Length: 238
Image 1 (cartoon, one colour):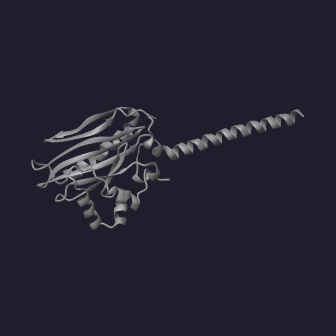
Image 2: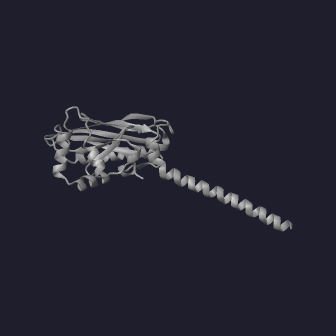
Image 3: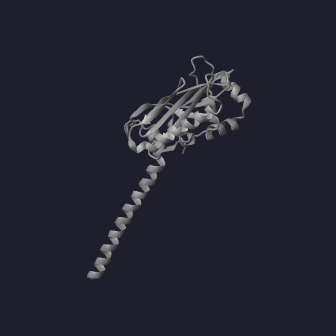
């Protein structure tokens, strides 16, 4: 009888422990799945903003380059990733020559710094081979994983997205209709969507209210143009 009671007690204990483990695993999987999306749109301060300093990476021959530097040591890998990104860009530009006819200035703006997610863009102004250039490159990082965030992790990039994107009006010169017309005339919709999804020749960044996509353009049009889509819960990827 005692052996029978001990067996039942042991069996019940194992069932309780297994149920707890199962709930813990399931909870961890759900937290991981909802991680970026839930934090990006959360109105709550789940994690405080990151402490970011402006670091002067380069000051030479009239060229100045600034990058964001996160002061917390646990983000050293992210700092290295940001610095490597800009260093590679500078090296690529310097291959064209380094003399008094050349300069490159890079600065950045932070558009989102909340809940251990960082979104910012580098604005590069350069003069190479007697021609001036201006580029805007968005970078979006999940600080918990240290990985870049693809735009498709945040929102569905489909034809509805593209139509809404090109209906955006935010340029003080009112050039959006002209530029979107140029893009639609020179690229098929599928091609534009592929470029945005894969960040091929384009980049994105986001704020609390909008996701912005930046298209590089010829100097004759303008150097680049940003279009935006307003954040809406029903537009999030499922």
